[in-house]
Length: 166
Image 1 (tube, helix red, strand yellow):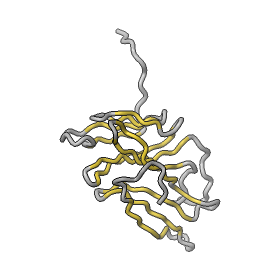
Image 2 (tube, helix red, strand yellow):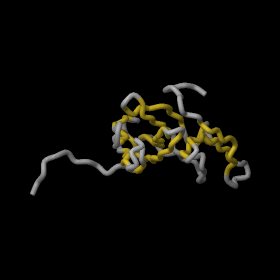
Image 3 (cartoon, rainbow, N blue to C red):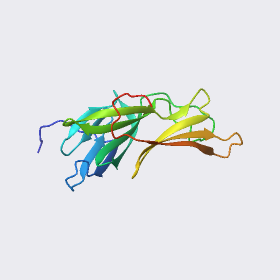
Image 4 (cartoon, rainbow, N blue to C red):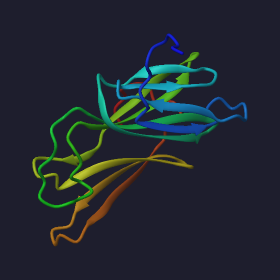
């Protein structure tokens, strides 16, 4: 038996959380087509990139609002860093913070993540925690024994306007 309909590829990342406050967990999916699909009220779709090769999703709640954090890597060439390092992420990695407002989901903030500079000697990572969203700056040790966590900045995102600068 054949059923007509469009083929749907498996999502790169999925998370469930109560993003609309009704007590029921909604499904949030990130597809290779660069679109985040958010169920609930308001539900919606937000296009993050033309195509994505890797991605992670997380949800945090801050002052009664839900925020979706998507960490994405687009179609880019691989990094040829000789050793494994937390700052040696592929170029083009970004964290995108989404927020619901005005009846729809929208991009609130976009931050480059991964290694920075030609030799990737420091990097930025973004974490969704129960207390909000943190931006962490990592500095690689010169003795090759890992990295130092240099700066932890709690992002107060209650009323950030899109594309605002800290």
